[in-house]
Image (tube, rainbow, N blue to C red; front, side, top):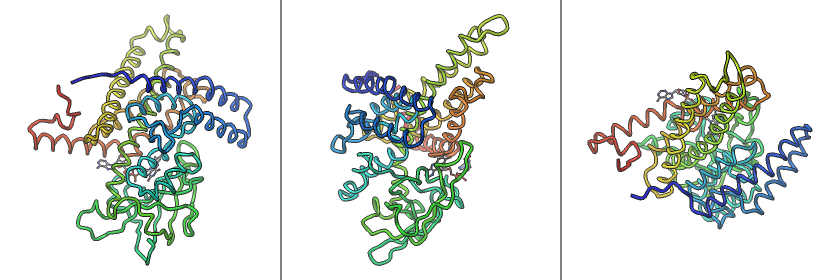
Length: 408
Ligand SMILES: Cc1cc2nc3c(=O)[nH]c(=O)nc-3n(C[C@H](O)[C@H](O)[C@H](O)COP(=O)(O)OP(=O)(O)OC[C@H]3O[C@@H](n4cnc5c(N)ncnc54)[C@H](O)[C@@H]3O)c2cc1C
């Protein structure tokens, strides 16, 4: 078994280029716009320019194949890019690997017909369209997609969609949604009752019902309605009854992409903790000299290290076509909780300053909270991990298959 944690030269070069581009070009521009409280239109122009520069420099869509204008990198290399990009506000958007478009690109690449790729995937990759993913409903437990109430019924050459969704992140400004709806309510297997559809949001019958105010502020995750929305048959994505499977396949790379972005934030929070602790003096010594604070650092470091290993290993399994469900579930749960704990510790070490908006920590803590709910809540991942551990033990007499299948 060869264990090699170094990236090939071209990947390492690309990672360093992203890092430098973010540090030398994107961050100063963001700081300048923030500093002079630039108008919305000015932000728009600046962001378009930055995206254009990123594209010209070949730092674009790291997760997509070259034929779609991307960098053609594998999942482990994408992990490196994303972790660099996320350290800068808007970083993932500037290089076109932001949620939910990034997950939808993977889904279209995996399940789309040639026609669908041409019509929907290409513009996403070019950055001329935006998309959203519309699965969760206000009146049914999102943790259990077999309960989805939105229906899609055949009518001539069309499907007619009716239902309510919410937390369709990014629906405002998106050109289309990937919608999961019930097409086969009588299918024997509950997981075979839903199908996925590409729904242009200009379709008659689609509306944004309301913005959902969240602890992160307003906007971004609206409640939406599909009222007799018609789409042609050609807009079914994947096979009929394959909506559940599509959701699972989408969520593999999409969950991991979140983890990669969160790792960048964990590192940022830990660096802030270390920096502050070495400068703040109280009760006769620097905070960094107190064991209580050192343990915050070491626990965060331990958890960050485990996060990186889990993400790299799960990415390796996806990249090599291996079963990745247990590893992605574990990574998602572990990294989301590490983010929450590390940002909280960093905020604590900053005292009142941490609670203020003078540092990014307060906002980071708010953002960190949803990581434990979206893309599978903590408890659902724990449930799935337990199922996989028991299955592995019962089928093979060992739990190893469910804990990475590593040769140790
Ligand atoms: C910021 C944010 C962005 C989101 N973006 C999107 C999006 O773009 N598209 C989309 O479709 N959805 C999105 N979601 C929705 C998200 O996927 C759902 O919130 C999630 O699937 C949980 O569903 P629910 O909220 O209905 O909670 P429920 O299913 O009602 O579950 C509530 C709680 O019950 C507990 N629970 C559930 N099952 C079990 C179990 N088996 N054992 C023990 N406890 C359990 C968990 O604590 C869970 O958090 C987003 C959510 C957030 C917060």
